[in-house]
Length: 538
Image 1 (tube, rainbow, N blue to C red):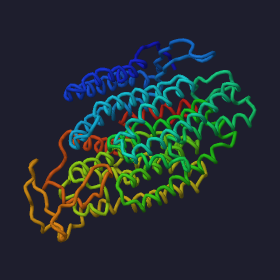
Image 2 (cartoon, rainbow, N blue to C red; image 1 turned 45 degrees about the horizontal axis):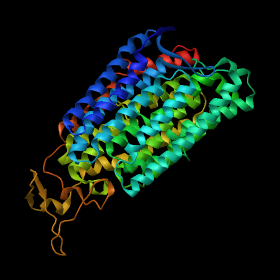
Image 3 (tube, helix red, strand yellow; image 1 turned 45 degrees about the vertical axis):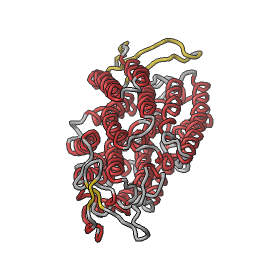
Image 4 (cartoon, one colour; image 1 turned 180 degrees about the vertical axis):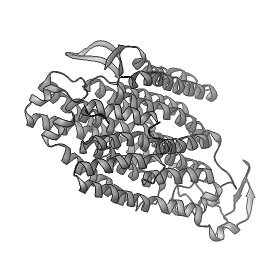
C-alpha cells in the first residue's frame, strides 16, 4: 500500500467546517443560507469521491501536521475503511441537506440557521472520525461529533428535547471517557496508537489482561453510540429531534461513528487474529446477538413510528457488530457492507416518516390506515426499505445479511445464525403491519367526511366534534396530541420534491446495492478492507 502526501483528507473536513461561517452570516437570507449548505455538501462529496479511485488501487492519502501530543501525530489518513465511512457520510449529506430544506420550510421550524450550521459541523466531525490516523485523533473528532450534534438533538427546546439532549451528552461523554481509558492502555502497552491493517503487532506481546481491558474499554465506549444494550436508551429518546436529525443520528453520522470505531478497534488496533486469541470475539458477538433480538421484540410494541424505527436501528447496528465479532472474512464483509446498506435503507424510512409528519401531521402507526393511497411514492419507498431491513432479496439488506449468515455458518457459530434468522422474522413482524395498513386498509367512515378548502391551498377532511364542533388541534414533534392523518392530509398530495427526491434517491440506492452489489463501489471497498485486515483474498 502506497502512502501519498495530500491535502485532500483535511480539505474534506475543512469544507463543511468552513461553511459554518457563511451559513451563520446568511441567517437573514434563507435562500443564500441553504445555497451555502448545498454547496458545502457537494464540495465535500467531490473531495471524498476524488480519492476513491486511488484507494481502490491500493493508495492511502495522508495529511500529517506533525506531533499532536508526545509520540502521537496529528494526521488524517484516507484508507479503505475511512473512505467507506466518509463516502457514505458525504453522499448522504447531499440528499439530507436537500431534504432538510423541504422539511424545515414545510414546518416553518425555528432557528433554521443554527440547525444548518450544526449539521455542517456534525458532518465535518464525522469526516474527521473517518480519516483519523490514530486513536487519539479519532477520539478528538468523536467527541467533537457529540458536541456538534447536541444542538440538533435538543433543537425543539421543549423540556422533553432538553432532557433527551442531557441524556445524550451523559451517555456519549461517558462512552468517551471509556474510549480515552482504552487508548491509554493501548499506548502504554505498545507506545503507539496508529492504525495498522491487521492490528498493532506489539499488542500481541502485551499482558493479556491489559489487552483485554483495553479492548473492553474501547468497545464499550464506542458501543454507546453503536447503541449496544444496555447502553442504548439515549437513542429512542433522541427521536424528539426533527426527522432529518433522526436520519443523521440513525443512518449517517452518529451511530455509524460508533460501529466505525468498533471496526477500527477490531481490524486496525487489535486485528482479527489477536481478538480471537484473546477470546474477546465471542462475548462481543453474544452482546450483539442479544441486542439485535431483544430490540426487535421491543420494536413490536412501539406505536410511534419514529420510536419503532429507533429500536429497529438498535437491532440493525448489532448486525454490523456481530459481523465484526465473528471474525470470519465473510462475516466481516457482511458486517461492513451493512454500514452503507443500513444507511440507505434507514435514511429512506426516516425520510418517509418525516414526509408523513409534514404532510399529514401523523406520527402513530395506528393512524396510518390507507395513507399509501394518498402518498403512494412515499409509502412505496418505505415498503422497499422495510423489505430490505428484513433481508428480502433485491434490496441491500439481503446482500449484507447473506454474507453474515454464510460467515456465521462457516465459523461454526450456528447459534448466531439462528439469532440472525429470528431477527429477520421479527423485522417482518414489525414492518409488515405498517405497509399493510398503508396500502390494504381503509379509513372506514372517515372517507365520507366532507372536504373543506384550506387557506393554504388543498382540501382537508373536516372533523367536527360532537362537543361543539371544535376541530382537534395538532402540533409538531409531540408537543400535543396528534389526530388521525386524514384530518389534516391534503387530497392526493405527496411531499414537495425537496423531500420526495431524497426519499426516492435513498430507496433507489438501497435497490442498486441489492441488485448489482459487485458493481457497487461500497462492496469493492469492503473487500479491500477485509483482505488487508485478514490477509485473505475475498
